[in-house]
Length: 126
Image 1 (spheres, rainbow, N blue to C red):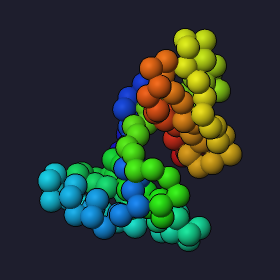
Image 2 (image 1 turned 90 degrees about the vertical axis):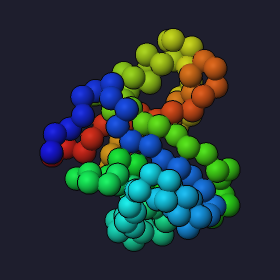
Image 3 (image 1 turned 135 degrees about the vertical axis):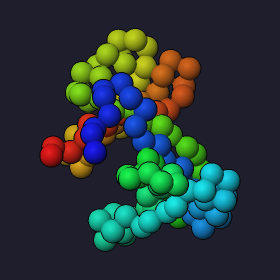
Image 4 (image 1 turned 30 degrees about the horizontal axis):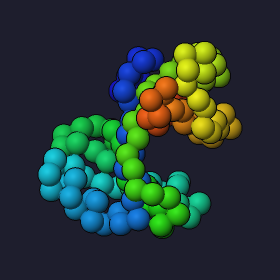
């Protein structure tokens, strides 16, 4: 399996306080399958990886918010350097909401100049 190229739309998340209904909706609509992310579940986070029918790897996830966040969906772009991408985004009129360089994978949430939220991440080292 190859890693997508930088600049590629490489992941998405659907955050919801009702993961069961969300899973049923998207699973029925697109024939997606879901599997609990064991590593995240061990930390107490409800997270389900999403696979398209016939795919060899997950393409996104459902994040159970337990009512702590509003429901939303966000897309993630693979980048080579999070710090440089955040700096470039700010120079172009965007804002950095949150940055986690110590996470695996490292990621940041940003807003474009119109206020749309999106994420960037770097893949974990092989």
